[in-house]
Image 1: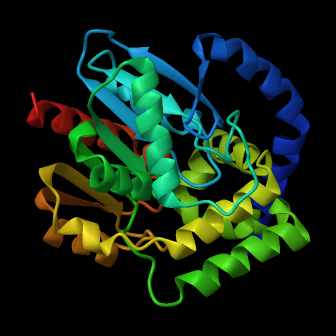
Image 2 (image 1 turned 90 degrees about the horizontal axis):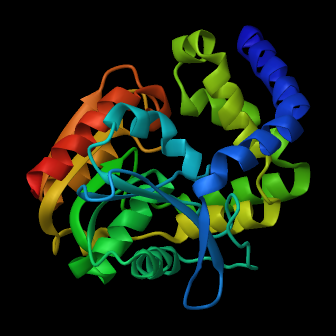
Length: 297
């Protein structure tokens, strides 16, 4: 563990040192980024990449990440789809209204965003928190979802979820996001990946530390309240489920529940991977997304 913490401390230092310069570079990269407004007026930062006339794919990022969470997978996917990515409310460059937040609200935000870009429907995939949002969208707006990608996610975090997520929110508010980096990084990526790809770890830490702490806390408490179990049995659509075999946050047993109850679902357990498979295994995620797009034509 001391060696791990040494690597994390080094990467935290780099993340702080480079944050200003990288934010400026991101401004340049985000030339295609636009802003939409949800039904309650919250601004949502988004972008559409890929082939304009291609099949439509909307991607929802993990807790405390942003739209760039999907960049590695999109690069692997190539020009096979028109891809919508965005910053969820409370995240990235989107608005950060005062909580509490609700996963149904996040799903409605995506429906509003799809209206804004003129999409009547799309395949929708999400990772972790994003998977909860994708599930909620499929339940609330089934006509908008042609297929589901559920990665490293769950419909319910369990009996102790409310307390556990509230404790994480309180720690962030009391001690700052820096206090959570060590805990998060070892859950995000396996040990070998962190050592082999320090630049990916550093980038994830940088995005994490840039979060508004109160919006982060509201998002944590939202996940503690998530219970979408009743939505599962009513879903009957192409669905690709993937989880890392070493995912401690949403373990394979949670993915198995999704696969058993969603008609049309397939489950892939990725050996050795942990919680951030879109960053740790982008080729595998792109393969799942491509299969999902092909499954609905």
